[in-house]
Image (cartoon, helix red, strand yellow):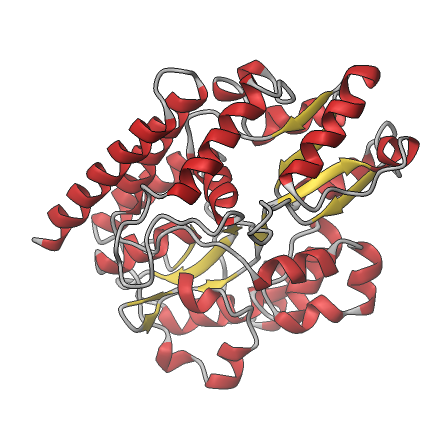
Length: 375
């Protein structure tokens, strides 16, 4: 902010720090933007909120502010997440993807490579975890948004999905059933994931276990890399690879990250756009990647030599972005997510079977879609 103000002395930026939990941030925007506030100019929003806020008429369309060259400089997935009904409403500030972290010292000890398939991962866990007294695979299974991300990655790695390109609900499929059964079996059949995965494990709780040396593999976001490098216990012992796949599928990571948009009721839209331009510039993106291990949303930075030295997993991230999975870009995504969270978690906690859960999800999502189609 100080650097931006130095370059633009006529503009002063007031930073409004929101609570860390994303659900509280979402509620804040529902309240303030919904009340047509003029006190906020630039909003920092989760990728899954763009369609919801744009549909509500809270975001300024950005087409008139940018040219095609600028727009094409960002990773292609943002054309799916930041565009709603043909209009661009947000610019990606950073990218975030699910990655597989692993104890490379332990894999080397047992002469194993990073797993390419889920079957490879299970075999490695069964071979190593009991002898080394560590959990095999740590992931996020509690009933919250992180579980949906994991579910989409599991089904995506088996050629499954939630909604197809035509808008048809396709949850109740054989590919999804195989993936959901596997999620359950990681906990209860193979017993390589903690039994409290369904009740306790989120990003930070799973990271803490891994960083304490209690896990062989961890699924988590990009921020974990820097924390492991700063930890004397983990430094030099952690590798990063693509998430595994099923035998007939491809590695699949969910796209996350934060995006910048302009409040449609702002009185200072030109100044707001200048700030967004600065925050999403190649220079600022590189600085954030170097200092915070943020994945850049500018495509060219994935080949930057300094960044490749600082973040050696960038080639993995670049490959992952080629088969990236996005959560449904819908104004009513929050309702979709609530249904997915509840019924997937019921499978993981042995309250229902996978077939019943997928049929219930299918029915409920079709009902939500039909309800919103009336509006």
